[in-house]
Image (cartoon, rainbow, N blue to C red; front, side):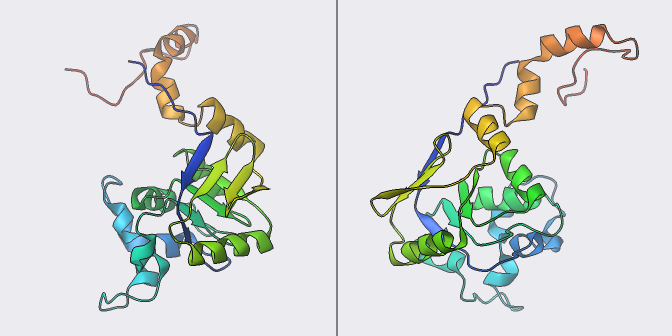
Length: 212
């Protein structure tokens, strides 16, 4: 079985601004929605407590606005994704439709969980992040282009330099961000290596399926 991991060197789409520093993973996906067998459908619960009151009435929040319904680039502020290390947070954002995030800074574990899904977390200074948010509010259909390899973001007819963590950039551009797919595509190499290890009884890689 062979699986090719796609490179993620360029992302484009309209944006959605999520304002506020220290937005934690419990805000991104409340704990009561973590009891799922799979991640399918979890996107509908993204920012649920910020989007709805106790009676499930919609509140004022960007993800409730029709003009951002097709947004795929989320523009945030400082320390986004802090708090618990739940992988459900980027899973919820991806299933909402988010392909990339631009912000002043991201919690390290959150950024790592995003990388595991092929979602770039691009950083810039606070003033620039707020400027992009303001532009997105004024131009909800405007295109934002993120060049991961070149570390640039283009919007409003101009291009600015941004930062992508070196390890993240290499993994995304070289297509080595999905470790599960990489293992599946290299099963023969894994088997040969395992056969040389005295403490491995059965070197056959497991694929998640039970033997008949």
